[in-house]
Structure formats: C-alpha cells, structure tokens
Image (cartoon, rainbow over the protein chains, first blue to last red):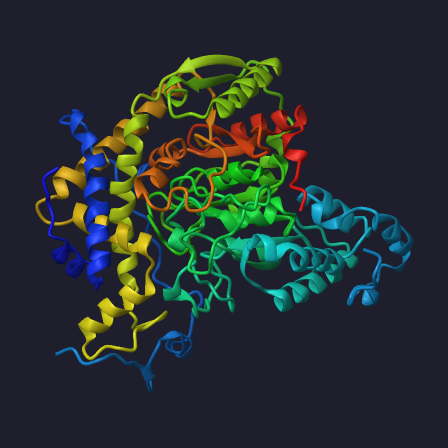
Length: 93
Length: 510
C-alpha cells in the first residue's frame, strides 16, 4: 500500500520518542495493519450513521456536590515530584 | 489441611469444630462460591481458614503459573477476620468471607494498581473502584491483583511488564489475555473467583483457554468507575468463575447504575441467580455460519457442534443465523479501540502520578521520554495507530469509516436476534497457543480475537464456558451471546448446559 503517514510526525503527535530500530519496526507493523484495515474500503457505508457508543447516548445530569474526596495531600503524594502544594515539572521553554 | 491456623482459634465456632475436622477432607481451594458460602455459613470452616488455604495453594504453585502481580495478604487476613465475626453474628451476604482476585487494572484503595505496565508500577490507588466497593459491601476477601497484558492490550499476557502467566493445563502455552492472570488464578484454584475486564474478548478468550466460565456483561451493566481505561466505549468488567452459577452471584453483586459512571445503565436489575432455575425448552439458539469457516480448528468446531446438540437435547431449537460483517470486525475494532486508547493514554505524562523519566531537561522531553520508557511495544503500536486514524486528513477515511462499520456489525446482531434468543459460537478459533507463537506478527495476535470482538462493538453480553478438550488436553470454550441486557438468557442457557455436562468440573493437574 502507499505510505500514508510519516512515522516521525506520528511519534511526535503521540509524545513518544522511539529509537531508530523501534521506529523502523513499528512503521512496518503499522503499514501491515493499515493494509489489513483497508479491507473496510470494500464496504459501502454511504448511508450508514456512525456508532460511537453501542447503546443510546443521553445526557446524565447531577448536582455538583462533593460526596467524598481524596485530599490534595494524598494526590500530591502520588506525583513523581512535588514542591509544597504544587506539582513539579521540568522547565517548559 | 489439618494444620492449625492462625485466627481459627479466636473464632466463636467451637460447636462446629468437629464438623470442621470432617470438612478438612475437602480441598478448600477447589470450592466454588456457592460451596464456599454454604460451608462458611454452616461453620464447617472459617473465612480465615479458607483464605489461608488459598494462600497455601498460591505458595505451592504460583512459581509455576505466575497468575498474580502482587498479593494483598494483610488486607485479606483482616477482611477474613471481619467476615468471620459477621458470620458468627448470623450475618448473611452474597460473598461473605469468600476469597476473590482482581485484575490489576481495577483500583482498590491502598493497593498497587499497575495495569501490567512499568508506567504505573508504583501507583497506589487512593480510592476504590465501584466494583471493589460492591465486593467489599458483599463481604468479599480480596486476595491479590492478577497479571494482564499491559493496559489490556494483548491476547496472551505476553505484553505484561511483569512477565507472562502460564496456562495451568500446559505450562508451555499462554493462558490467553488480557485477563490471563485472573483466568489462571481461577483455573488453578488460586482464588475462589475473580474479576476481569473485556474490551475485545479479554475475559472470554482467556476463560476459554483456561477452561473456566467468563462473562462479559452488556456495555453499561457494570460501572467502569475505577477501571483504568483502555477503550472507553468497549471496556466492561465481568466475573471469571468456576461455574455459571458463580458468575450469576458475582454479577448480582457488581452490576447496577452508578452515579460515578454516566455510561452505566439505568435498567432493571433482575436476580441473576433466579434466572438459573428456568429451563431452556423452546428457546432458539442461533449458529452463525460465518463463525464456522476456514481458520476454525476442526477439534474446536467438533466441540461446538457437539455442544449445540447438547443444547438441542435440552429442548432448544437450533437455527441458522448470519452475522455477515464478522470478517470486518477485527479491522473495525483496531480503529475504534486504538483511537480511544491513544486519547485515554495521553494522561500518562509523568506529572501527576506514575513513572517519570529521569533524563529530561525540558517538559516536552520529559513527556516523550517518560512514555518511551514507561510503555511497552504493543501499547506504543496501538497509540501510534490510534493517533494516525484520528489525525487530520485521515479521520474520515479511518475513524469515521470504522464507526460506520461498527453500525453494520451492531445491525447484524439486531437482525440475528430476531431469529434466536441466544447465539452460540466458538470463543476462539483454536485452543491456547504457545509462547512466542504470535508475538512476531501483531496481526496474527489480533486475529485470535476474531470471534469475541463483535460483542464489544455491538455492546451485547457474551460468555465463554468450557465445552470440551483438544486431543492434546487443552480446554475449548463455547461462546454464548444474547441481546442487550439479557444476561439472564446467557446464564440460564449456560447453567442448564453445565447441569448436563461435566467440562466445567475438570481442573488441571497442578
């Protein structure tokens, strides 16, 4: 099949960073999987509505009330790094 | 069995002591939920003893099968003591004192929940999943967290960061996946029952490979709150048990509307154990011709056809049905599931919880290095595929197309259920495969789920029950599927089948 993607761009979009070997291997895998997926093109779906959820979707509302909570302190303890009551991360720029 | 166990002496069950010694002839770890509850209520043994018997079993064989990622001994012992106290007070609850295992993507407060991934290896859940809360309310004893393919992505547990589980029927074979650890734990009697989750067959296929009963309920039947997400429109938690009757008990406990999961369904909840008592005379079972074509192992086909005969002998009528879009299900699934996965897994960024790469100067580097080091190859493969099908310029050709094909697959089931009450098929095209047999070719691995994937896309309930063995002694699974929210029919047909066959009574010689 014709190559429809730049592996470099996908890796960047997905916030991954692959080694050259891994990139080459996954590129090959994706090509083969997309080749298989192309069989869907043989189906005429022009008058078919898409399904995003198998059962009917409807809005579910409730009062925005606190019923139970996990404390901020508990949440921060889960973080790889925190400073006082903030998450800590490397510089952005 | 006769050795003295910590905890048993402090129980107020002295009147039952002589009975307990009699009961020591019974191998406790082999009990079903029904038998365990009966024995506990009759004070034939205590929950502390039963829990210890399970841990003894685990200590003996876990080195061979690797069903668990970690055990929760202290919590379990406390829960068993609490259960014994309640039993002594005359309390009755559906799972009171019964040791249950959890797939390691279900959050239980204060326990590690790794999802089979390096990226969550040290994650300790600060809250209970709704199913865990319901299990605790029903009196269950939580034994440990079972092994799985990373984030549920796989069909063999070979994608677990913690190493693979082994099939107790043949240690050179995979147990299936992704809920392979739960299937092994039930099959090898390392728990009384377990919970798994199923996105494309992850309860049913390992249940089939390991010779147990596995039920994927209707989408929305069971709350997903506290289930680590893979593909949110397909994921569903369900029971993995030794019998259909046990699955009914478990489903009674875990199902129902949950305000914390807006997709959990507001539908009537019947008593599933009641459904077991009804006979199946006059019901129609549909055999979909597309499931019996090339690619199906002849021994599996023979077993399924024989099972259909058994159902016929119970008074069911066999009808031919068609699910014509079966051959497109795998392609459709990998578009939909990977798209949802790429969005769901974007939360693993090394900031709020989980693993963080140490070798990063900037935030952007930290994101990509963390994900590079924290995710395994299959997860990366699916994130990349999902990223592609959602990317600008390809959305219509792939993601939208996939969603439309999903409609066709859903319509297939609606049409088929006009002609029958339940659909019977093989759960998997072949019995358990060997390690490394399919790891080199992702597509071949994906195709091992061909018979189970459609039920997730259509949202219908599906169940696998043991229905025979291959000439090499590997279990074969019969899949039953029913209309939305008609688990009663699945359980009724499955139970009647088990009342008249003995496949579910066999266990591996470990």
